[in-house]
Image (cartoon, rainbow, N blue to C red; front, side, top):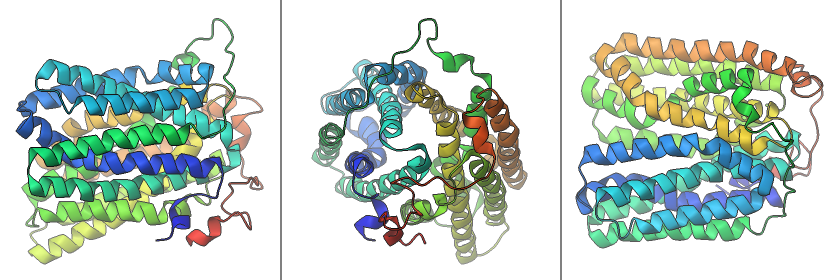
Length: 432
């Protein structure tokens, strides 16, 4: 896979992708080792680790909107650098934490800084990339993220294999340094003018009912995230004859597929109309993946169960990429100019809702109900995907002359980051 398959054309978008790649390397290693580090090395009870992480992400999610507003008003580049540095400091503090309360404080800082960094990055991208090119750039960023996570997970696997305290500490040091380097890379970007917000309009997103509905529907579709990390592992262990190592293989398949094909999948999503269509297709695709996964418990031999699970994962990642492309366009397209950070901070709470409610819901549906649970889950995906169209039209009507016009299919806008623009450099990624 060449650099151009992952990174966007030279310019601010490539700098953003480089920053994403650097910190995703550290995060990939952190994600696969952190739980065992806190339980096996630090000595915290698993229940306390789970409680601490749940509380931390609840706090971080709640602060996402005001932190996004801060990025809008103070300038997203400076805010992104600040939040990256705060994340680095939080991860570095894990090296010396030995009890629950310092752990809780550190993970709250970590989750809050991560939420702020995500919102500031989106505001920064909106200030540096023309609207018609944002989904294409986000597709590159997602590919970069997955490539970095895959490599980082391999590094973390070495630490797990060693099973030593020094191995775990090296992973945390790597993650802390990765966010420090990320801050330095982000500082190279051009500045984006802060927004002067009119008095009395604080946190307007909280009163934007159409956008709130869209965020909720997106959260339902984001249940695909805990499906991969929790639902399928539980299903494999409890309901199928497949070996447990297949879970790791499915994770690798997912990250590699997104890194290779997300840019291609996002090429045709250039307006709210095409975004709604992509989300609708994602609902049916995710339903199909649920049906395939359910077949793995049909009393088939081990090899057949593995083949069915792999087939389900292939269909699932296709639905995931369609949803991602449509979701990005909708989230950006309906955010008012000057409030990108605030609105993206709110839109990002859908991830936290899915990760918080997902474990309980998926356990009940898949482990308790079995095959009918898979069909119910697929029905939720289809229902949310079809409800997205009316919700986007409602939101468009409340934004006359702005987002509403994007619901009509028309000529594609040309921008320096349009993947269909001849000579843009995006065609060398094999997406056309």
